[in-house]
Structure formats: C-alpha cells, structure tokens
Image 1 (cartoon, one colour):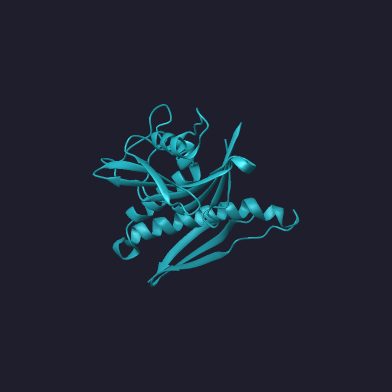
Image 2 (image 1 turned 90 degrees about the vertical axis):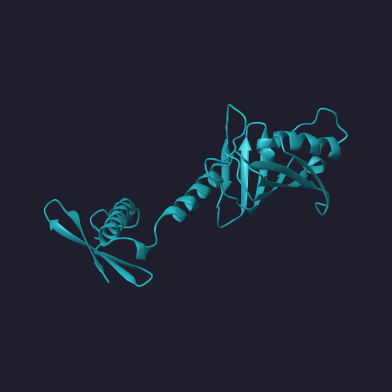
Length: 220
C-alpha cells in the first residue's frame, strides 16, 4: 500500500494498492472519541472510526469514474455512515451497521451492474495512516498542559529535549550542504511560547573530539 500526499498542506491524498487506487480530498479530518465510545471496523483490520469526518472520494477510470462524499458522525455512541452522491451530492444513503453496508447501499442505488462492490474501508478512507497519525498528534497536543500551568522543571525538560532533537537533525543534514572539511557548529537557538523565552546554547566542551554539549536555561 502506498499513500502519496503533502497533508495537511494539501488536502488531497492518493492511495495506491495493487489492482486499485483512490483519491481522497479531506474536507473534515474528524477526531477519535474517547476510549469508552470509540468504535472499530471489523477484524482483522480493526481501524478506528472517527467522528465528525467528511471525505470526498474518487475512484475508477474514465467513464466508470465515481466521486462521492462520505460522512461519519456518532449518534448515541454509534457511528452513522453516509454516502452522498449525484452531480451536487443531492442523493444519499446511510447505515448504522458498517461502512461497507453503506457502500453496498450506494452501489444498489447508483449502478445497474450486478455484483459491483467497493470496500467501505477504502470508500471512507479509514485505512489512511496519515490521518490516523494526525488525529493522534492533535489529540496529544490537547492533553498537554499550557505553558503557564507547567513548572520550571517541566519547561526545562521540554526545551532540553527539543534542543537535543534539533542538534541531532542539524548534524545529520549539514554534510549534505557543506564540504567535509568545513564543519558548521550549531551555537544557539531561541524560541518563545507566549511571554516565556527559551534560549538553548550549545558549547564545544571537547575540542579534540569536536563533540557538542547542550546547555539550556530559561528566561522569564
């Protein structure tokens, strides 16, 4: 399976698998409900099903190409799967069972070809890893405390972690841009969050081995 995208900067995600391909335009990314309310697709995949999610899906070739809008919204703790279709998405089918059941209802109304089926998972884009990761990342961000609620120890630990990660990335990338005999040295980084300024200074403690040591402090 392959996902081609520049999400979230571009809302279009192309998905390719042997024998099939889909193009998804993310209209509403959706979020995962809490653990008590979260519903999964059937085994063996067991993908998490988001709430408040809208995606425009296109698949097929030339005259057989289809474009639909897929909606998922939870009601009383259960997801409702809707497929909107037509030139202006004026028609719709819905199911409280599964995404595939909604897909089957769509084909029953849309196509006269018997036996035509599309996996509900692929129609709704529930397999897309980039959306899964993005939702988790945003969910974690919501859980993190705001800066004014954190102790100085916590803020120092966060800044130190950021500094170490940036130093590692810097040292990995500079050889691609500079001659091997010219070694750029990252000296300091400054960033701010609200009214707090974070200065991260890198010192060369061992000049022989040319190792950089991280020293960090906070300014209030």
